[in-house]
Amino acid sequence: MRLILAEVVTIGDEILYGQITDTNTQWMSTELDKIGIKTVRKSSVGDQEDKILQIFEEAENRADIILLTGGLGPTKDDITKKTLCKYFDDELLINEDALSFITDFFTKGGRPMTELNRLQATIPSRCTYLANKTGTAPGMWFEHKGKSNRTTIFVSMPGVPHEMKYLMTNEVIPRLKKFFETPVIYHKMIRTIGVGESFLAEKIENWEDNLPEHIKLAYLPSFGQVRLRLTAVGEDEEILKQEVQDEIDKVLPLIESSVFGFDNDDLEVAIGKTLKRKGLTVSVAESCTGGYISHLFTKVPGSSAYFTGSVVSYDNSVKINVLGVKPETITENGAVSEETVTQMAEGVRKLLKTDFAIATSGVAGPDGGTSEKPVGTLWIACAMEGKTIARKLQMSNQRDTNINYGSVVALNLLRKMLNGDYES
Image 1 (tube, rainbow, N blue to C red):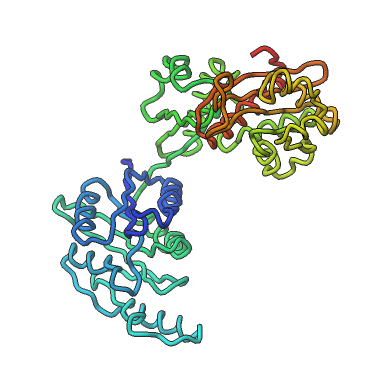
Image 2 (spheres, rainbow, N blue to C red; image 1 turned 60 degrees about the vertical axis):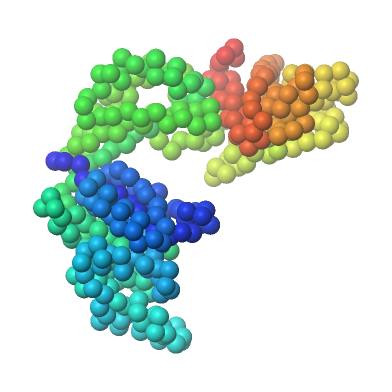
């Protein structure tokens, strides 16, 4: 059974200008993947007929399915229907079902229907009309037999997300499932932290080289983390799941110390599960991260079972008067130092009476650094009864990156200490 390929094309100058964020293509690709259809390309094109025609031709050579969104409104800049007519050598005609629906749509809403609204009921004569019950722009389904004598499916939908989702869910997906015989695509994600992509690749090279032909591996790096995505293609989902699990069982001994979860287990979720299972609590003292670590904890439902609270000690007076950092510690070593961040962690743990505590202090940027402590200098600490570990990070001058990455490293330090790893 061959893999069915799809291409998603978004139409509209507003996307290319950056005035609208394209969320449609991600959602559509996810839904296609669920029914065994692989998205091979995503394209965006402006409201220019020649460019749209070029995209159509290129997409037809690459994919079995071309899904289009945008350019279906009542105004002159919406040219998708006219361009489809030109591509398929067709003409626009009033579709009576579409006209009836649009008329009813405006009547029920107590609004007058203009001639522009009426023209939305015009669609290429040879397409199948897909009723959009959430708006006035129609969906259109084309079955096009090109030069290769292979039938390609073109589907045109509105760019408004909730209208596109309605059509995809109620019209497009059911039709695609009937039209194509598709394989199963099964994904499994291994979540790792604290090890670089290249180093990780070296550790598992022999395992990766011996993966079965129908199981592929991808490396997906982010802040301090690498997700290993295993993708298996076949006909029986249960068999694929077992085959992927067998491969995971082979690789885990090589990387187990770096693995914190699977699939959608974010780091803060995995840590929360460990804290809850062990009946332990954590608190946070944040300076340069400004409450971001606290946000990561509290966005998890049920985190009140283990996350007690935090102190955002941005000013030194809060470090001293609330957390109990000694004034001379800051005078002698500075707020961004091992000594200060250690006392912050120990202070918030004592203040909020928790088993563990995390603290951060640094120069997030983009300015404020010195020759001794340049922008990107960050100290983190994790404290428990009788033990505090501090680590220094030297990062970039990108503020958001420093806050995100520093928070992940701080959480990973907590994870290690929870697992009894007090040295690494």
